Structures are given as C-alpha cells and as structure tokens.
Length: 284
Length: 195
Image (tube, rainbow over all chains, first blue to last red; front, side, top):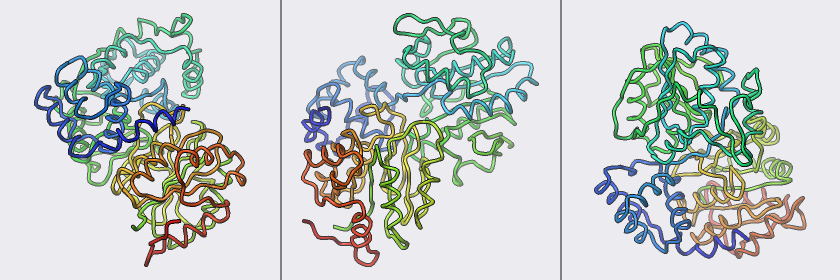
C-alpha cells in the first residue's frame, strides 16, 4: 500500500531539521539568487520532503549537492516547491461575482491591464480570458500572467490541460455564469484539451519573482489568488506592497477565498467590494 | 509532556462521528482542534455549519493565518490542505495526497513538525488509509494517537490501517473519545498517562 511505501522513508523525512533547511536555502540564494527563506515553513518543509522522496534521495545534503551542481535540478526544485494545483474557474462564486460586478466596471475603461501574479499552470488565466471574451472586452484587454517557476510559465503558455479535468471545469464554468459550453474554447485529443489559441492573443506570459522583482506596470486588476499562503508574514507584507504599488487608484485586488487582508496589512487602503468574496478596491 | 493541540482525521461516516465527538466537548476546552474531514468541493461552507449545531465550541472553516485558539475547531476548507504552524493555520494547494485534498496525513505531519510531542491525533471512521502515515509522524515525534474502535466505525479501514502502521495509544469507542479528551486536556493540568 502507498502508505507503507511512504513509511519506508519515514526515517529519511524525520532527519530534516530546521538547520538543514536553512542551509539548503542559504546555498540556493548564494548560487541562484532566489530566496525561499521567507516562505511559510510548514508547506515548504513538506514540499522539500516530497522532493527528497520523488528524487529518491537519502538526505537533504544530497539534494543540496544536486541542486547546486545542476541548474536543471534547481529548476525542478523551484517547480516542486512553488506549484499550486488549481482548476479553471476555481471557486465559481468568485468568477460569477467578478463577471457580474467587476466586468461592467472594467468596460468603462478604454484599455484594461490585468495581472495574474503567481499564475501557476494558467488555468485561472484562461478562465479570465474566456470571461472577458464573452463580455466583448477581448479587443481592449491585456492579461499579464507571471510565476516564479519557469516550468509553470511554459505549461501555462501551452494551455494544455488533462481531458479528465474538463468535466469539472465545465461544471465550474457554468456555475460561474458561463452561457456557452466550455468545449467551445478547446479542442480535445484522446488525453488532453488544448485551449483555443485566440485566447492567448491577449496574454503575456513571463517569469516574475514576487519576492524580489519589482513592479513592471500599472494594472486595473491584480489577481493573486492562493499565492500569499506560501509566504511568511514579512514577505507577505512586502508582496502586498508591491501589488499595491502596481494597482491604479480604484484598481481591483483579488485574493484566494481563504485569504484576507489582515489588520496588520494595508487594509485601510482597500474596501471590500463584494460580500463573501475576497475582492477589494484600492481606495487610497 | 503537555498536549497543546488536537488533530482529527475522518472520512466516510465522519460527519456523524465528528458530531458525536464535538458534542461531548464543553468549554473551557483548553486546546485548539484542527479537523480534516474528506469532502467534495460542493457547498464549501456547509460542513462547519453542520458541525457547529452540535457543539459548544466555536467551529470555523480555517482561513490561512488564523491564530489557533483554545476551544475553537478549525475545519479544513474544501479543496485545500490544512496545516498547523506554531500558532496558526496554514493552507496549501499542493497536489492531493492519495487523491485527497484536504488530506489527513498533511495535517498530522504538520502538527508533529510544529508541536513535537504535544499532539493528540485522533483517527476516526473512513474507508481508506489516509492518516496512517501522519499518525506515524505524530508517534515518531512523541505525540499520542487515538483511534476509533474499528468495530464501532461506519467504515473501519482508516483506524485499522493506522493500527497496523503504528502502535496506537488508545482504541476507543466513539462515545468514549470526548470524555477522554475532556479528561486529558484539562486546563490546570493536562498531563496524561501513556498506556
């Protein structure tokens, strides 16, 4: 059974100490300039364990050596520690609210810039692109989809998702107020759904590290959903500041459904626009 | 050793089992309780609401960053993993573990990492093996593992698998679990004896 196999590696997992993690992350900063030291500890520790298991390594020391020797291994490591497994139209009630409340507001702008900060493999970016196309805004919108993980950005750019997921995505799409059939937006082979290339016309994909890179434009909407959950308080605050500086006045900030702007954040600068949804308007 | 958190895993049949356990806990219960109940993505707020009806404790769908408070029950939200850090809830969207998100193993493991020996883990009814690995982590860190008596479960596989994987501290009938927790998590002196 799976758990028995996992139990075999129990002693390995147990050997990971805070100091070893610290040493690994410090080496990574030194060699690659990417800093995971301010990532949320519980999640990071789990993910490092799972990298050890999947790479069949005995110790974190081996992982460290592998990563420092080979940029390809480092890239795989970044992928493993940062990737989110999400879905198209995740939280349909959010997309429904966005469709009904925010899209009409956006329609009043001559040109609209939207940033998906931490886009992972792109499911939610394509969801937004579909929604904006249905609202007739596709000829005056540009979506910027960024992620720290180059592999995720490549996946997002390809826009290919497992066919087995499309049933759930279709149901999400309908619950989010979609008027068509989601199948209108992709072609299927026996394993995959390939999203229509015209959806990509308005999307710019790029690698961007929220922890260290600066703002690169001013946006009308920023979606940063289920990304802040991977950061500790200090990094979270810094990222929120970066997002704040990247929003126009009265711009819209969207967080994940189980995240909120807490007291110690820059909450005073925002007004929650929609009850029960983490959709905020920048008011100052 | 002094317990500082209770973590609970449940799957098939879990709703009734959790109601029974929670209804037997009264204020002032001195510890936070974090629960993973396997669940679908539909009706995201419903589980916490249903559990709230049967208990004097406060039941909430965990949000990322919630500060863990005594006499409060944190339910893993639909389609997120729930973890605990030193004093807070943390959520994650990493891949499902054995098809489960939330997964019991993820919660238990995080509790063992963050609280060491000061964890009481409870495995309730369920028809899979989630929780067994996490229970091993809890035991390895010196914590305590309770399981619902398989003969008393709607689905016995989960506690049974845990019992195969690890020497559990106590096997309890459902209605014995909350009295046990009340007794062993007393505010003034919540030391407990090991079997």
